[in-house]
Amino acid sequence: MPATPTLQLSLGPVLFYWTREHYADFYREAADWPVEIIHLGESVCSRRRDMKLDDWLGIGRELTQSGKQVVLSSQTLIESEADLRDLRKLCDNGEFLVEANDQSALQRLSAAKRPFVAGAALNLYNPATLAVLSRAGMQRWQAPVEMSRDDLTRLLDDCRQQGLDAPCEVFAYGHLPLAWSSRCFTARRYQKPKDRCQFVCQKHPEGLALRTQEASHQVFTLNGIQTLSGACQDLRHEVSGMVEMGVGVARLSPRPEGMADVVTAFDAARRGELPSPDPLSLVDAEVCDGYWHARPGMDHSRTAGLG
Image (cartoon, rainbow, N blue to C red):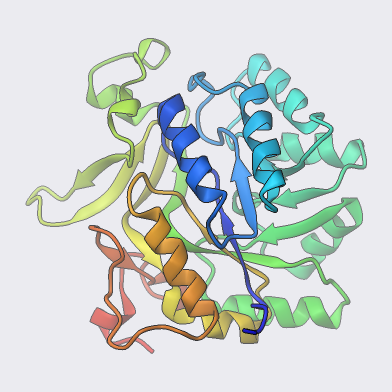
């Protein structure tokens, strides 16, 4: 029998705005994929109301029956009292672990002495902060997406020396979430006000490409109030190094097409089964891994001659 992988795979929350049918079909397929953890929920924009908390809970229960660990991801930018009410319901769901993506979620969960996952947007860079959150109930934490391999290696070494054993998760695949704003850039592209956006971001199930003036390069991906990288991070070739560093989980961010192939490729990589030669891109998109190598984020090691 093959050895059990020491690196777990997780599906992050869907960052884009899909239809209810698309969510249902996606997670019905994901139930059979070789991932151990699946994050659910709307983490970007509160105006995306197609899916209610009860809908996410229903999907979560089905995935649990398929042997998945389910985590509910909180909204990253809280802008109103209504957002806070929804956040309280999420944190108090009573069934699933919650990923805290902002300080209000962190405060709610820690005050209630509930275990939680710390998201990348909390910007965790040092063992002192991780020690505080571990005492507050943190079960796992995601490294900031711009943190390099060498910096993360030093941080994990420091954590081990201080007896901090909460697993670290690395954003290993997908458009990198870079920033959030109170403005909706997708609505502005369509010359619509944010509060009457007519949900135009649903026209772009993988975001809206923002290119250079020459249209030769996709610099960013606009996703409502969120700005993502233009290129898609792909750390498949770094999986063995992650295991040696002590990374516990590799996060794969959902895309609308070809995600089963992405999961299969990462599952093979963690088992040491990368094909040779291995295609650079799993789906039709530019790829990057610059941040991992302490370079500009849009760089790619196999084209920039990086190690």
